[in-house]
Image (cartoon, rainbow, N blue to C red; front, side):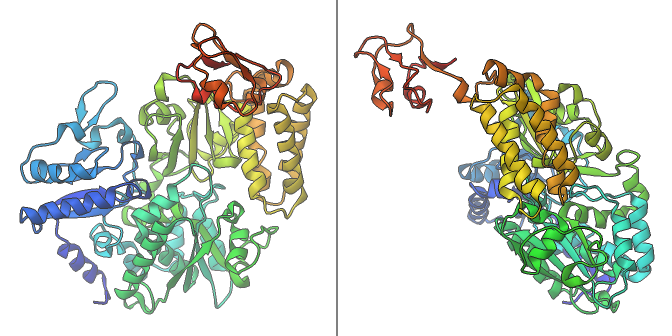
Length: 611
């Protein structure tokens, strides 16, 4: 069946039945271990009881609450089960779905009240979230386009093609205040307008799905959970700027996202929502997928375009901007996955509705991948202006094991580390930049008292050095020299003068690097120097690491009151640095010890400590 009008969309919406639904999280995090087996066991159980026509098992995208996965949700009563195992599938179907009795042991337990919570709407993790980009993730089957349509999918595209001029479409996006969610925060409507004003018979629309930040999985989850929202949004942009071709540049390491994008494109094409004469409007638009090889620098739009052209993924000086000269030298509009996911809702609910959420200069919501030393690891979406304290302590549930909060890294490897004094700043583009960090694409990694901030800076800078394209000297050489200084410091060979060298070199790189990657690469070093200078001084003056992470500054010591002379440490030491007879106290010769930690890992009585 080809869809040719809004009325056809309405008929599909009516056709999609809504019986009792069992939603099984099918994002990568849950799917990798057991979610497919859970869904199959449930289907087998329904067949066993002859109830397969009354209950629908749906494998969805990510629910976001990754810490508690695999997750199963029952509709219409909205019961939320956590840490579900395949063996629990029959009990859920038999006792709850068919018997009406909730499985208490699988319900979420609020850590503050110690009470079971069956409805996700009453969980602190979800309470302050507003899901716009993630609106369909965990709600629909991403491999069934009819479910997307049943949730008002493609109505925005149909309305634009039937009732709005390209200029009106761009004006709506501008009035919404939507800014690019890929890092720079450039106004999306302005970007579309620049591309629309470029004169060319051929134009392109590009989806940047090259998500490479450590700990980030925002774009991946949207592609896995709601691929049609990206397709619809790209089509709207194509109509607005006069483009008939779309390209999705996605990391090859995202096989599930690629599979679901391919499925969505094929189904949209079959229904006439992609291809020629879409909805009888005379508008033609197609989408193809291009694969990235995992180069972090290809998140920068000019490097991404070069990669799609089969060239080395290196950035180029701007202007000309891609809106004037992009893919194959034609005008090209590039937005990232999360930016695209917001577009259909803006047209469904109006630009004023979207602009009413967030702050004066940062409208709408932002998706974050919350990770690190935090109780509720997962994917969240909060209004711009929400504070870091709300995210970490209310949504995130605080720091693991009752440890003390130390820092939060926002903006990925090019972001900065913020401290306790920054917890009450609002999350928006300007506030994070003023604090020495950045919004970035949305990674948020929380650290506790056991993290060494010098090591943190070294880790992120090491990532940048590994991922640098090498085109410009400030990034290629400057960051390598900074990494060498940090290597000396954590090895206990640094000096006070190294700190001044780090700062000077970092500021030169910020001012002279070619692209955004190089210009922001010193942020982890500068922010940790500014906020944790005392730790750097301890490393270079006292030769100590308070977090006990820099093993070169530490000594493995056997506690005599705990040692029983079992000889396991001595037997496993690779350099024979441990002496002592069987059933007698043992001693480590510090001059021989290579600080590999083998002795500590083999000591069953925990008699070996770091000092």
